[in-house]
Image (cartoon, rainbow over all chains, first blue to last red; front, side):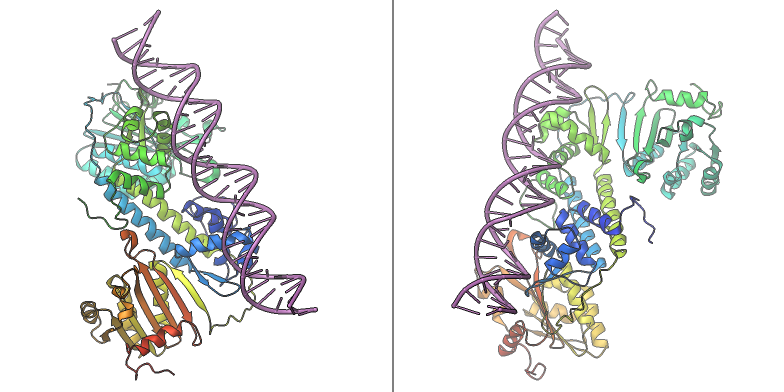
Length: 282
Length: 282
DNA sequence: CTTATTGTGATTAACTGAGTGAACGAAGGT
DNA sequence: ACCTTCGTTCACTCAGTTAATCACAATAAG
């Protein structure tokens, strides 16, 4: 059995493949037909219908659009025979299609005329933003660390959050004479982090309330907790539901002191996570 | 103005961007809202509604799902403010999403249980397959050349068809002592090809009927024409419509002599494209 | 307190896609 | 020559989704 990342739904492979193909833009019948075809060298409409729950009469439509997408070849005999291109070709075809679109998108977005904007003098000392998604959150974490002047305090709630990129950003901050402190939830993770950041202070948090086990009913786990210059804060969490793992990470990021978010930091301090001398109440 | 590949529809950039985003899975309102947001630093629902044609009351839904996809950040103030992540982050986010799916798909397809198949003793001497799409066709061209035992004759109808990969495949065939002959439609293209294939015989076809100019009304152009071991044939064409260029290339590939396709080859010979000594009528 | 603006929810209309069956033509058997 | 079967296309219904509009509650502004 192949070990699989991503959705670990316990589906037979062909159901899972159908789902993925639909997410990649194929209709249900198209996806099912393609999967059915991929399981054999070639087949007729009937063959496909038998192994795919696609009504026989609709196999033709489905296969025709698959052909127009370059995923299937057709033999115009009677009965017609259909053949799926190889798995590797299919993957390459689909991938290049999307990569092309994304790159066009990049151009088009880059060429947009900016809208003349009201000078909102946005009150940068109070903003609170909600964001979600692993990449979006990682990216903002990076921005915040990059912009740090004096101090970066980071608590890592799950190993998947701590990647090489993050490590580099932390080291870069440190090289700018920013005080960098990294915390983890348990010894094990702390050791891993310390290994990749030998020059940086790593501690293990004693904050029970950060740990899921405190509230057994709550499947929400703290994922990251970042404090920059005691002025900008980011907290993110994720749910373990559906085994989707680190997906659907949700985060809040705020700037400014008199910000509801600061409460969290106070609690941090109150619980004694951070050494008092490092983070005093201003 | 940015030079753009792909659909050259003469649309304003923001319309084009909306279209691309929809192709990438966003709903109309989501796409329009995102584009509107990308044109400014941040904005309220009203701002978005004013610069996109999204009804104000629906902006909230749209933006919410954009947030859940990690493309937008939300400031929960009153009025709420929304901000699009940077173009680069957006492109990266979308791309990695699809790349991930494709790689999962590859795994899932690879793990499919093959269906026990009727021994159809498929009449390999008569099959004719229709296929479409640049990549699918290129790929089969490659397969055919790879499988050549004695002779490969290729006529290139458009420069875009002749890439490095194809050149390599031809050289590899030649190194296996396969006779390789390449034709082009005009001198210019012929020279280009001869340059990359110094050891291979390149000729310029005199076949008027291959050239579009013969039938001015027909926008269909011959793209490639491949004959392998006088036993397998591939012909492909494309339409110039919509300026989509080489997209929607359509091809036919057949194996076996008494195959309707062989007619094409006979005509080829009749018109004197190929030297008689190289390709005689059996 | 009044009014304009902001946000939520419900409702309808338009569309798309899934599912089903009629109809047509071709192939083959009687 | 006729009928039957099979392959294929087409037209239609039903359901779910999305676009579009409105009514109303909540909030801020004057």
